Length: 254
Figure 1 (cartoon, rainbow, N blue to C red):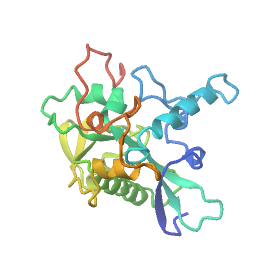
Figure 2 (cartoon, one colour; figure 1 turned 45 degrees about the vertical axis):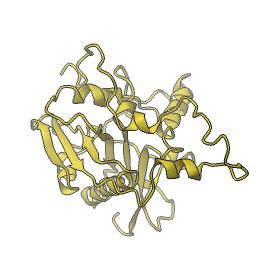
Figure 3 (cartoon, rainbow, N blue to C red; figure 1 turned 60 degrees about the vertical axis):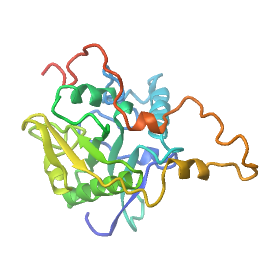
C-alpha cells in the first residue's frame, strides 16, 4: 500500500521494536551486530534463546550512544496516518569508529580521503510490500543525510554489495544511493563505495552550543563543563581510528 505521506523520525526506546524486518531471510535488526563486530551476525536468535534479550539491549544502547552529543544512530520511515503506525523503512548510520566492519572494508580502498573521517550508512531497508519501495528508500536516505548535515558531518559513505536481489545486503541497492546524490568513490560493481559530500551545516550549532545545551539549569557557571564520562566525543566522531592488525575478509569467504 502506498497511500499516505511518508515521515521520518530518529529511533528511540519507544520505536526500537518497530524496526521492520530486513529482506535477508532470518535476519533481525533488533539483535543484529554484523556491523558492530567483525564476528557479528545478522541472524536473529531464537525467541526463547537466552541471549535474545541481552543482544537487543546491547543493540539499543549502541543506537542511542550518540544521542547526548547530536542524535541517535538510526532513522525510521513511517506511513503518516497509518492506523497501526507500522514502520516501513529503516536506516542505521553513525561514525566510522562505531562500526569495525565498515572500517575494515574502508581500509581496502587507500584512495579514499582520510580526513575528515566520514560517517557511514550501514543499513538501508524498506518493507517489500511497499509499492513505492525505492521512493521511500530515497526519501529515507535523503532525510538521514539532512540530519547528518545538521550535525556538522561533512561526508557520508556506504558499502552496498552487488547481488541478485539488491535489497538482501543490509546496505540496500546502489541505485538508491545514486538517486540520493551519492557517487561511486571507489570499488567496482560488486563492491562499490558510495560517497556523498555534505555541507556540514549545523544551523549555527557547534560543539560549544551542544555543551551549553547540556548545562544544568542551576549551574552557576563555575566548574562547567564537567569532565565527560567515557563515551564518544567530538574527536572520536571526526577522526579515523588508529590502524589495527590485519583482519579477516569483512565481505566473508564467498
